[in-house]
Length: 134
Length: 316
Image (cartoon, rainbow over all chains, first blue to last red):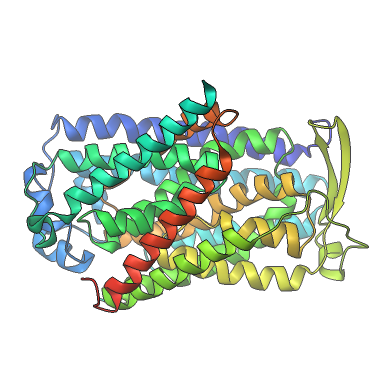
């Protein structure tokens, strides 16, 4: 373990915290959803009639939003679950951003540039702007 | 006693998968109208992913590569939602394992970074392509891919400490070398890699497949790190998990923004496979690994064949 670079230890610590938070949040929100503590946008009993449809048809039938539109539905039990999923999807970008200063301090400019590029790619995916088809 | 426990475990897993197949094969389910209450499906999903979590650990594969073909073949959910859930399942497993692997030096951030950058870009492209293709073409391509994966897993050989004469120029520029501590032997192992450009091209292709089909990609990442680049096997396995966490994060956002992430599929699957993996780790010492691996390969071949025939309209 003495051979583990400092930036890797830093990345591991932040990744551990973020992953735990995301997984607990996902589990807790699912309990809220499945026991209908918050009313879901798509009623639970109606799900089997729509989940066999392609996603475009599912959205048309249920009025489900695309992009970041789900944020407006966080009061609904089903969309509340996307909070935990979003945390899981963002934690890697946060970890990469966190190690950039450490890499620059060590003079690892190429690694720092790659980390910044990785953050940009992840943010581009998360932006909701990359959409084609349907 | 331990051997009979292992055999019973495998038999139990086969029964769970058989039960799922029977539910799936009912006429109403085939017509897209479930004959059962909604809550039966997440429970069945939990049971199946729990079994997959156990088998995945015992067979040394990621759960994601099993989830999509099996759930896509035996459950009534559309493949769009199954692929979205598959990505999140693989992502969750990788995120849960990566911190310990990184902290113990069994994964190398430095080794994974270039591959992750290339793979995450191509996984986004794969996700966009996958979500734009009609279901029959997707099923055909998925079936062919899964059969190819089963073949790769069956034929692939691994090397604990491959001989690498020197870093290639790109690998040297990226400083893809280091030392890791092998706890099994108690020795520090120096490593370096070569053939970096070819490996990055391979990771680009794997990223497309991961995004398009929602598959975890350990089945491909480990051979590329280990056999193509010459990284030690343990470091390859650990770094593959880290790589997967980055690549699947990118593709998962595309599915999320398209609306192809259904919490009713994702949450029971993630919880099921993670609990199953914990049991799998405990059974690791007593289960007959060869039998489990054979069962997994047979499952993959069957599910891949089913997807291929479904896509071709032979077995609708």
